[in-house]
Length: 418
Ligand SMILES: Cc1ncc(COP(=O)(O)O)c(C=O)c1O
Image (cartoon, protein in one colour):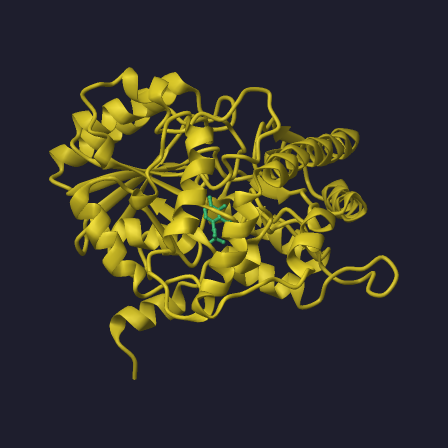
């Protein structure tokens, strides 16, 4: 017999993780396992190992203190190194004392939600959204997520006016909302948010007296057009002087920009004394190993290496994006153009037997179950409309080619409603 909270967590494993592990248990290889799963469902950058390997496989000088207990919200020198990097990205000094380093952005999201929400209080998210937020922001905090559908034109871009309307309605219904959570750049669409949009988002949060949680885990995984603007960018904050920056919390991590997803290291930036103290207290339950912290500190303090690595990351992502979109174009498969992150929001609406999530599920069964291609249906992302799928492409181009070919073959046999 387990507690109700544990039973709920066990029942709610993110669908995205379930599909990932099923695909990875029988991975496609053109020669040794041609019938295996092609995994274009997992947002990992697998293009960077040649640059990481020399750093990660060289024996390191560890001091005894490096394997003793360290501060549970992150060693001061790692936090200082992360602060220096984020300070450049945000174009404003970042105080390492405002950072809480934990075991992944997932843990940082869990902490942000737990710090802000009491049981049953709500966090509003523009939909579609990164599907694991259903668990990350809810599973342990006991908060609830309220998706707000964004308008379809242009691929459901972030529209603070829609959030404003929804928050007004929730207030009239006496729903206690504590925060708006966004991904920036957005996952699944890979959109960059403009400074004006972000300041409008902050203004809406201020009007409704709620905090903002911005998941900026893809901040450096940008290939354009456009540049990444943080929600803490001075231009964003300057437009809304009424907003208290202490109510703007940012999540970042090493999984995407540094292609180090398996190390599970994330960070929460929160500057208010109370939220910081509470986040540090929660970090006790999900700290990062000191060995990993030392590794990352040494990586980040080699600023020339970081510059080169991040620049290469952008070049390689741009090439893999071009390759994936060329393939989709050749197969006549529509998608929303992206400027960042590792995924494309692919439009398969015309291939549904009818415009319903049941039909989307049916198509997904053929793609995942029969063709053994892991791409994820929009339902997982609370898509406002059926027929959209997320396809990740930051992997070996040959695998992307074979995956898109499998998709093309399924679609060639699916009924078009148009
Ligand atoms: C927007 C977003 N946040 C958080 C995560 C998870 O990060 P981590 O592996 O550091 O927990 C992901 C991974 O896909 C993501 O896309």
